[in-house]
Length: 510
Image (tube, rainbow, N blue to C red):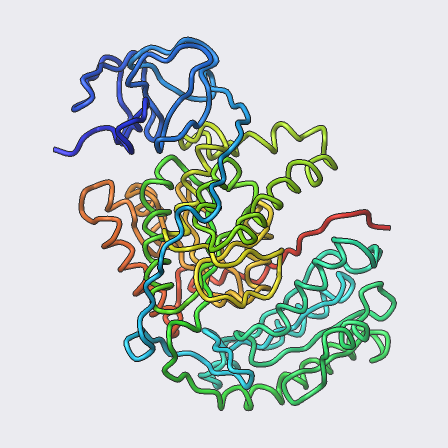
């Protein structure tokens, strides 16, 4: 029989319930009886823990006891607090020689080779708005092409409007401006776009002409720019955009998938709607798949700066040098000391608390969530650290500074060049993100069975003893190759991804 609770490390003083456990139930191998009802995914104390003492999970402190906790007690937000503690970053102490296969032995997928050498996993036409004022026009142009019309172009995956809510009264200096520019620049060069139209209003701060100059854009058969005011209004701009796409479609349809090495994949790593099993099943299984991708010469990029807080020392130890590791530390400090100070009234909650859904799933502190979240990055060396939307150039395991909001985080990853996304969830986040296909990994069997139309992989098989983390990693890696080659993910089948472009907006708007 499978045990009813999971122990992650021999030094832990809590275990995690695999199902609801009633009062006075003996937990096998722990030789303890529960003193309270323990909800599925929640923790139960295996030792007496005095007030002020550390609560240990993953062989790491996830919080301190706010009161005396007895063996068999439910351990959660009611009796657990959090304190900051200094970390020993041990820069590069865990660095090792990564195994990378020779080119002729690497896995392959069928992708779209672009003129600049990059490889796309999809072949979209994108319509990007420079400002919210042109968003409706972008959407109307995309909506003008029915599935019946697009079915005539078998090598074109669709037309997607990339719109957002800023760009007009925005300060043209500072970090907010820089990140918006980097985000639009990243999408404009994304290999999953075979064709692109950029549309502005004409009087906004974020001018199309200014971006064209700074980003070296030039009109071609598959890249066009225009503004509504210059064209002559909404109707004329929509009509012009439709004609542009009609000319692009037969050109893009000539593109054919060709065998490409897995080294051309940049995999964005995301988690949302996490639960206590995220750090035990889906996240480490995805980490195992990332190790395989790195072994095949590819790139995996972890994100969400607030969700590595408290576990950043696990990444600095894997950094190839102190400079790379220090970038992680600097982003953590910036998040705590600069970014959150702008929202002082919510600082404690933002700094310490998981979301309500996380708590319901058994996650008690941000430290506990972070320790599970970093498992998505596997075990190989950390080779580079990037600012939000910065161009991801390194091969291997990398990190990007993004907020914890899933949609904005993935926007930054795609702008950086991620042509695939893997998204783990324990509560059931439904997420898609054009132009990059998103693979959804469920942490538990119940979630997968309830939401099988949205979940691509059931990592709950690890809990059931039906699969190991390594076996699940191999399954995920193969699915990454299959989806990169054209197989539709569940989010694509459901038509998700048109509304998930959300640049990181910061600073005053006027």
